[in-house]
Image (cartoon, rainbow, N blue to C red; front, side, top):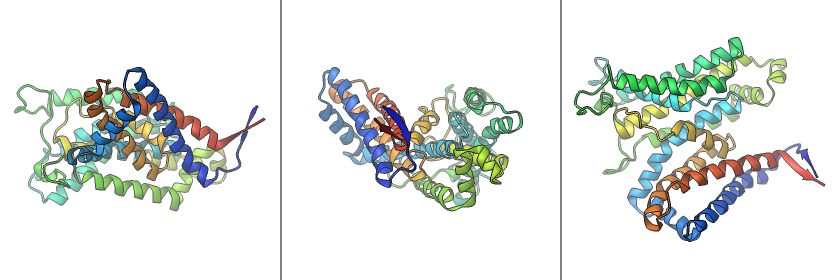
Length: 350
């Protein structure tokens, strides 16, 4: 038995591989549920009911999917060009903090809502961009491995956020709880449905997913980034400006992760705490891989993860199974997706 590289993967194989990977992950997770003493079909039915069975469930699922779409796009954009951005978590937090700090600037609180919202979103994206440009510069100038620098900068960024919300940006009205000053009311994102947490950030995330797909598929920059990811030496020989392309990819990736943090503050929380993100930055890596680095696929992958996380809570209460089964299922999906990606690139020969 040997593996032979395919010249090209058929469109049907490209579509069916992710579906098969998720199906395999659900089968394995179902076996674990059965070992825990519950019926897997009943458990999955309760997960779907918890995620889509009520107005609250649907809106919470979409709210949870919003930051996952943006951090998934951030990872997909970078990985497509072989820029291994593992720092989405730190960029998320820095974008969130930048929004609350910018809200203290005189004039922002009294600005018209569209102006205040746009300004805060831009500031959040810039904060994420600046954080990622540090490891990108080190990579391009000195050849430093960006996996290490982006990963370590997560801890630096989170500790910096903790210092700021317990120091200069601490809210004096929080009764001693470490949280930042609230974002200005004028900059808060409007709700899509009354008496829910679903906000306009979902529309922004969906629009950006379509825009990123178009940039990757229809622009010179997208083709250059793809070429750099496939073979950097060949792309450089063909005239692709590698340094400039990777710098632009870094700006886009960091900006998307920072924007996720800004939108989470302006749409859901209203302020920053050290538990603002339940690992949205790291989950974005899983989302990107589940989507096979496709920007439109990120939407479906983020929705799948959100369904698992939101629905697992109601399933856990009904069956007495730990809600961590959602994390296990998503992790299994990543592993099976890696196998599926390999099989789309290679065929088995006897």
